[in-house]
Length: 301
Image (cartoon, rainbow, N blue to C red; front, side):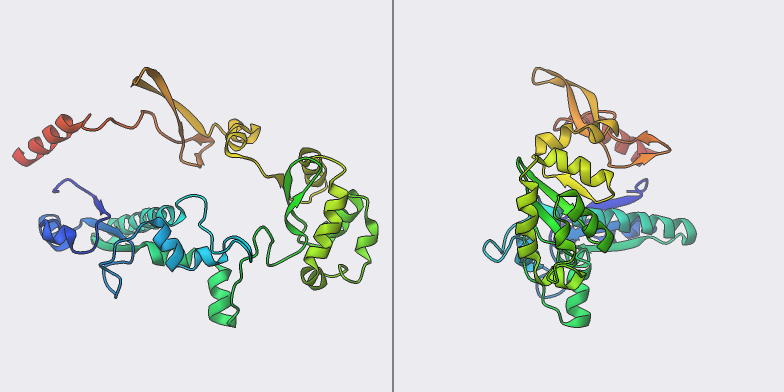
């Protein structure tokens, strides 16, 4: 503990105290320790002691109620989003605490709630309700703020289109060969398009059926209309943009009849260089002797 900068744990509140490893106990050993506790609901409140997994938080945060459409909601997001948001919130908070310690010498107890982290990530969904009393509804693949903006069928495969601006909408109409939509009173202005979004979507899809998603993606993007194919995961990982960014690292791995593993990097570059793992994840207990030896040496010093 005397050499540690940060302690990170994700037990239910009270567990680390019972083990003699709570914040106050560790602070007595190292006064400037940064102690971060991640739990489903935080260290206090009526749900503080309740168990939680990602899907529990997805439900309690309201996230599932706005995912899917009127027929499929409530629907779980396709990966453990709340777990991820809790971890990212903890990372940001720990970095902030380390900066403060560098300035003031103070340690910190950082209390991260997965429920809080999820709610504050929802942006205008929450602010519209708090400020304007506007209850969000599940809209599936449609964009609440604009139309045509969402997922559309083509002659081969779906495509996402975000013609949110008036100029983009008008250019879209020309590109798909339906200039008359620009002057149709149902679609001529942003708000009327939103009110008639499904009628507009049907008319656009009739035109999109004449070519595949890849063709339309190229045409729209060249014209400045944001568009992209809807890919499966294998397609997403292998697309040229991802490969160009060197998002995946190959690292040595001499186990299970494999010589290497391919792992995702950090998702950002520094000074033009991709960051990420230089080694494979350790096997269980692989570094136990090394770590225990270092701790013993530190304790004897």
